[in-house]
Length: 108
Length: 450
Image (tube, rainbow over all chains, first blue to last red; front, side, top):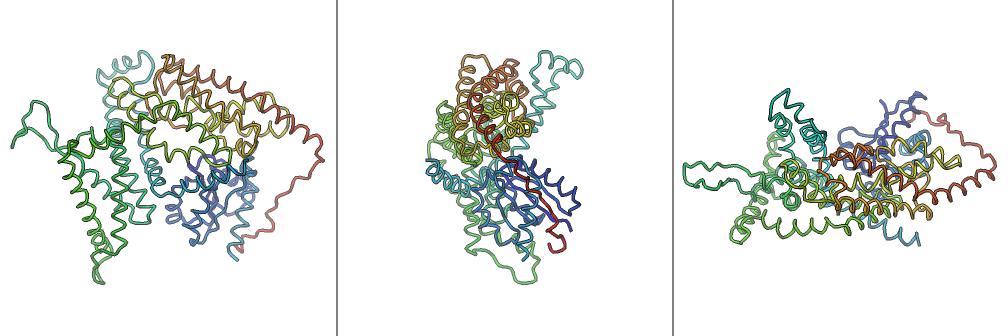
């Protein structure tokens, strides 16, 4: 079963750039991971139908963090905001690692 | 000072981002957007801004070939009020964590209950057995109906879910298939909503407005869109979005929850006028604000990226410029915002706010002078690159040249500010002892324990 790492920003535009970089790193390291980017408005639907394992928010929608945790905290996937430094330089490896660490901590 | 501002802005964004009604309206429009874009492309093909285009196709297919294409665009544009009602009702139902599709249904029906369902023609007597057909007039379903659609969907869906949640439903005994019992559960909530709108409809027939459509249109929609159709409102919008971005918050996503419904009406009115071949009424449409004030995203940072690549020497700025150029051409600029960064950067904030405002003012003047035509309202994706976007949204080649001119002006405005930053980064890079890049290893994460 591949782990699903889903990125969300307001329209899923710039997060899709980062998602691609993360996927490249994952593929290069043969990691069973799917990274996708979507609009925050579809989060509810994605959770119900595709069951992501990690939910990451772009820094430009960090104001939605509290709301997201309130709504979907019980769902079981870790929810985190990507740091603006890593986001700015589109550092796929670093964000991927952060996602995996979050996943690991969540399992404990 | 920044701390204080951030303390004000973050909760504000949080509040606006949390408000279920505003979220529903935003997401509801998102549902209609792909339809509008596709329909726009059909309309654009039928009216491509090249002389001889229409004659060329008419030579092949005969006069009236355009109607093949407008038969696709027309239903979308003339139903846009109804569509936004449907989309908002669905999104609001989802927000309330109720039955979304049932909510969409009830919103739609509530809207139709308020809408005249007989069409009267001048000169045709409305008698029994006469030629007056039952039907819906596009007049009420198009851009004139956008605001009413939003109000109705919110009220209807809220009430529906409220009644539902109170448990005022018909409960089926065990053994009844769930699909059957679900449809019965929605029965009483639906009845309450439909009764409410039944009375509203009757109530308005006793007023001089006759229909709720007329009332909303003259009391709310006209003044509101009038207020949105001013340079002042656009300047405020521009400052709001850039200031939010400065704090790392997606500015348009926040500001559009307030401005979006208004500019949507302005845009759709132009589109309808364009489709019908009448004069375009509004300057400040969505395409105008997308394609004549900002290039490369908020702050018009495409100019900045160009200066970064051409004139800056520090490694950090050069690299970032290269990374940001291609997305910037398509209007995406988060790498610059968070990477340069623009967030909380007191130097860059000055041109970041100023450049879009200068673009806005100059483009407004140019439009008023007739140098560039009003935008047709044709919904190109906001990611359409500079040059193409100006031409396709107005049909004027000069508009494309105008965009490039403003892009260069933007470069000149960003230049002195980014040079200051460049110098600072150069000094830092020279004095920095070569720091070992932190090697990222995935070895310590094993997939077995995930």
